[in-house]
Every structure is written in structure tokens, then in C-alpha cells.
Length: 493
Image 1 (cartoon, rainbow, N blue to C red):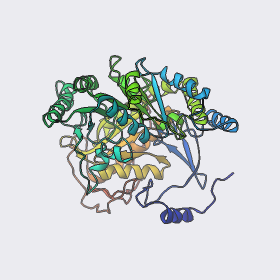
Image 2: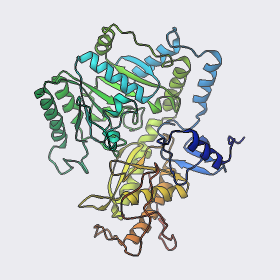
Image 3: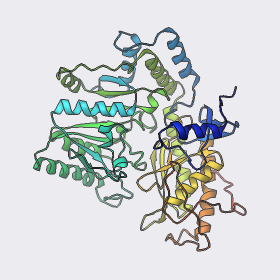
Image 4: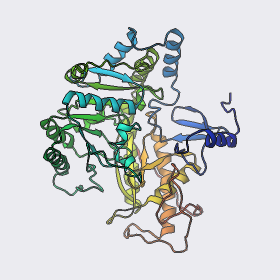
């Protein structure tokens, strides 16, 4: 049965009329109308199938029958205010805590990643009695006012933005493009020392640190993987200053990194945050999220005398769905799949780096990968328009991928966890073809990775999938696909 009620143009017209103009849509120059989805695939109003490499929300696969069934069955029985006693709440909290270090034992259920991070800040402020927050450059933690203040990814693009004087921005621990790179003898310590210097500066002005907050792996910042040992050293500096460490797992938790259930565990078994926030994958698209913290932090929050309640957070339906998601991850070994397919994808992408001068860096863990495109590997000139061209060309071949990072030149892989080796083969084969055509048009060769542009190609600059214009040398019209060599051999797993 078709889920389409309106013609696509009518849907678009009504969206423009009734939806806020700042609410951007993917591929705004030619948006896709998606009416149903299953597993790692989405379908438009014409029945065309798209491979979804974007949706880390549909964590165990779009419309997973076990998750749908769990929510529907509980909804038929009861859904009510979470201030009533109900087994689902405590059983799910117990299941969730079993995946975490013992120290992290107290849950607060809320409805979105933004709400979780906002509550985490309240916990930190109350527990420490301090106000100052340290965040990372290019970070994004949510859309509410308190989080825009700590999200440089957002406020640095606002023309009239004023930095909250209690917020301090540390360099992103990016060892490819950042201040300290892979050739540095100890980038973890160097980046952690930047945080220590910020703390000293805050103290010098009479301030006190409440918390350091970071995504365990930066997503909007460009799929940045912190060097091992960085979080441990940062936590030591922050705790010595009387603050606490908040790990934002909204994008990367629940087994996505493959080797571990939580991405902060990549830093080592000796690293335990004081607060962990969760969202997106926790409900496979159902609006739910969670803050998990220590007993000490929770008791300090209670000592304020202000009662905390959340009308919908932790309701019986949400918790039933959350338990079903955990069941599917375990039953279908999706964490193991993320590890296996992620390694296969990385091997394929590394081959592309050997072949294509536009590929500057491959990075990621499990099914969280990034391909940074550059026009010069020495100067690291961002290939922003080229990245958007890849995204647009993939869409034409029914593959949905996005690009992000401060220069919007990082191709981001964060698909549903049922993504397969065959899916990876197909996507990388298409990327290979597209990069070959772009490099031929630009006159780029692997032994000469400087920006040599073909003067015969003068094109209108494309927009990215969010509708932003790309200020770089390549535009949106197409290069002929005739005569492009095909990849005929695939790597074996």
C-alpha cells in the first residue's frame, strides 16, 4: 500500500508554506520524497530503492519488525506518565547499565539527544557548583539554547553570535588537519595540554570548570577520531580542577564502533566518564534518550531540592522499544557486523586513497567512517565542491551519503547497522567511478596532487545536501561517464 497522500510537488509546496524556512532538507535542489523504508533501504513515491548510508538513527534497520512489534504491543496495553511505577522503566535501566562500567549506574530518561545533553549540563553545574564549560572546536551537541552555546559547529556560522563567556573552545583532536598531526610525537598529550591551558586561563579570571564535554568521536566535526590517551589526560586535568567529564554518545553509541559497545571505550578500559548521554540509535527512530551518571552526581542533583520529572521520558512504550533494540543488537550480532563490515569498508576506502589524489584521509571505527577529500595532499586544500559533487552523483545512482566537517569535504558513512559487505562494495565502486571522472576533468594525477584545474570546465557551484553553496572549483554539471574504467576486482573479506 502506498504511503503517499499528496503529489510530490504539493508536498514540497506545503512544506515551504508551513514549515520554518531554516529547517533544511536533504538535496534541497532536488529533494527526495521518502514514503517507506526497510533495513538499510529507503523508497520514494515511485518505488525507487535507495541505499541508506546516512541514517544512524535507524540503528538496527528501518522499521525492524521486532522493534515495531514491541512498541505496538505495549501501546495496546499502556502508555502513561513515567511518574507511575512500571516494570519496563527499571528493567530497561538495568539492561542499559549492564553495558556500562559499574560506576555509571543511575539513569535519567528523556526524549532527544538535545534534551539529554542539556540535562547533563544541569547535573554538572549542580554537582560541581561551577559554571564554566569546555567544549571542542567544530562540536555539535544539540539545538536547545544551552547547547548552541557549546556547539561551535553552529554558533561559528551565525553572523551575530556572541560567545558565552562561560564557554571555552579547545582544539578538535584532529590528527589529520588539526594543530597537532599524526607526525607529532605525542598528539594526545599536546591536545590535552591545550585543555589544561584553558583551565589555567579560566582560573586566572576567577572562573571554575564545571565540565568538559565531547562526542566520543566527532561526527559533524568531520568523523574525527581522538588519539588514544587523550580523554584520560583531559579527564585528569578537568577533575583536578573540580570539573567532570561528559561523553556524548548520541551519534556513536550502541555498538556502532564494532570493537566496543560505547565509543568512549576506545580510549581504554581505564577511562570512565562521569556522565554519558545517549540518543538517536537508542530507540531506532522512536524519540527517546538517556543520561547515565554516577550515584554521587545524581545525589548532588537531588540535593538542590528541585524535583526532576519528565512526562514522557522512560514511558512504558519507549522502554519496550529500547529493550527490543538491545535484543536485536544481540540476536543479530550487529556490533560484530559493524566490526566486520567496517573493516571491509576501510580496506576498500584505503585502496581508493592509493588510487585517487582527491582522497586525503580515511578514518573511522566500525560503521562510522570518513573520507576527507582534498585538492592538494600537502596543503590539505579542502575539496568541498568535489565532495558535494560525489554526494549528488551518488544520489543519482540511488545511494544516499552525506558530507560534513568544518569545510564540508568529509564523506560520512554512518548507515544502519545491518549494512553489508555487498553494500560497501557497491558504494565504493560508485565512488571510485565518480572520483576517476572528477580527477580526469580536473587534470589531477596521483603523483601530482596540486590543484590543477581544467580551464575548459567552468561550472555553476553546487549546493550541498543541506542547501549550502560550495565555494570551491568544481560545479554541478555532469562529466560524461563514457569510457570510464570500471573496477572489476573486489577485495575479499
